[in-house]
Image (cartoon, rainbow, N blue to C red; front, side, top):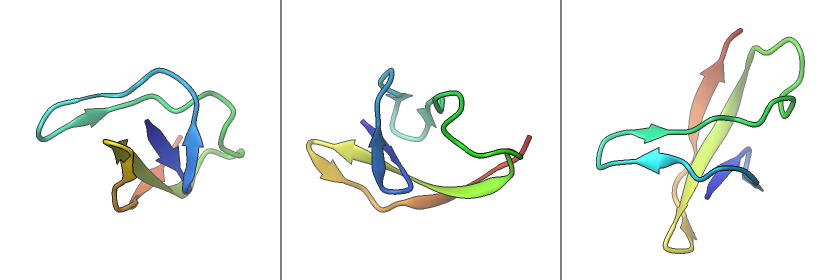
Length: 58
């Protein structure tokens, strides 16, 4: 499961391996214009990882 800005989001589970996480953010979840920083964290075995900043640009 993925959390954006510390809120778990519904949707397809991300795919990942040891070094890379691939995910898609749901359409419309971010404001317009699409240029902001969000905090993304993962839930692994029920525990949330540290959130990392991700800058989204259009």
